[in-house]
Amino acid sequence: MKRILTVVGMIMLAVGTASLLSDAGFRADVHPPDGDMLVGTWAWQTSLPVAPGVEMPLPALVTYHIDHTITVADATMLGGLPASANPYRYTPGQGVWESTGKKEFGGTSLYLRFDPSTGILLGILRSRANIELGENFDQIKGTMHLDFLSCSSPLTCADPVSAPPEEWQPYGPVSDFSFTATRLHVVPMPE
Image (cartoon, rainbow, N blue to C red; front, side, top):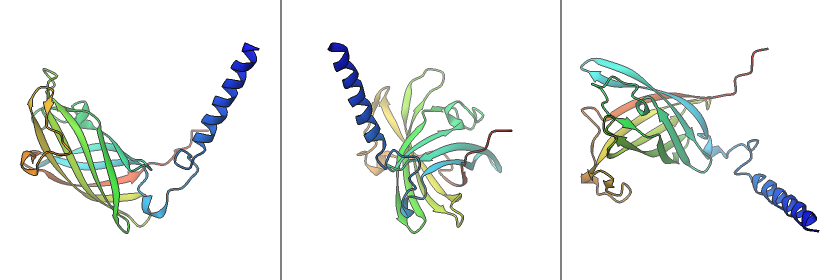
């Protein structure tokens, strides 16, 4: 009898899980509404000034989720720039996005900044972006603004959501960048 109850319980759990996963928010075959055409993963390209007149490309992978959150991974996480241009290490970015007009979007992401030699948390980097979706829905372009909120001591940082604007400092000598990105599609396996 105990075995039968265990099997019945497992079946009920499986049926419950399947019904949750069939919700439109979790189904891969559901296309987002027109206002959410930003949903997907994008290969970003931007150039960061590393010296007067010298720019270095900075690739990034950015995913805009259907629940209006953002996940970002870029070359600064593991030191993809010369130490003279970027002496810090960053966590992946986490953020949110929203539609601001027809094929126009805004996004805000946060990253934690660390000293690579000590591992000490130095502050929070904020990226704000204005994004424009191209005619073919597979290209975007836009501008982003970076600013920084210093920690008063290791592990003692102001709340980035409620910090007053005057506590945010420019990212560096240049805080505004333009970018382009291409939507990622499935690439078939070789035959």
